Each structure stands twice: as C-alpha cells, then as structure tokens.
Amino acid sequence: MNVEHEVKLLVEEIQRLGSKNADGKTSVKFGVMFNDDKCANIFEALVGTLRAAKRKKLIHFDGELLLQGVHDNVDIVLLVQE
Image (cartoon, rainbow, N blue to C red; front, side, top):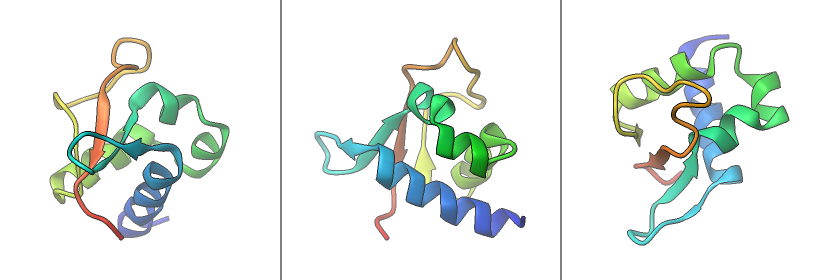
C-alpha cells in the first residue's frame, strides 16, 4: 500500500470514529483509533501513517510520536474535510 492511499484511508477512519469538536473540526482520541479493529486491519503502522498525514498538514496532534497507552487521550484533529 502506498502512503497517499493510507493517508486517504486514515482521513476516512477519523471521520468514521470521530466527532465534531468545539471548533467544528472532526477529532478522535488516539486510543480509540489504536484499539479499533477495523483500523488495526487497515493500517500496518498506524503511527507512521499518522506522522505522514501530520507532515502533509491533514491532521494535527500534540507531540511528534504517539504511543499506545501513554497517549491514548491525545486528540487527533482532522484539518481538512473531504
């Protein structure tokens, strides 16, 4: 799978799992995504896909790297609406 395709799938999964925040943007907790069965089946390396999407300025989250357990309550915010 190529990175562009995985990032597109990531946007779709954030829309599926997330909800609108106070700013009207869709956001989801990292722990929700990490523990979702569908995401686990789609993304071989969820953290890598998140970093690629962040570099493309499609999403925002605090920090550089998200780790399961430690960062479960970190919001992943979708910056684009598709």
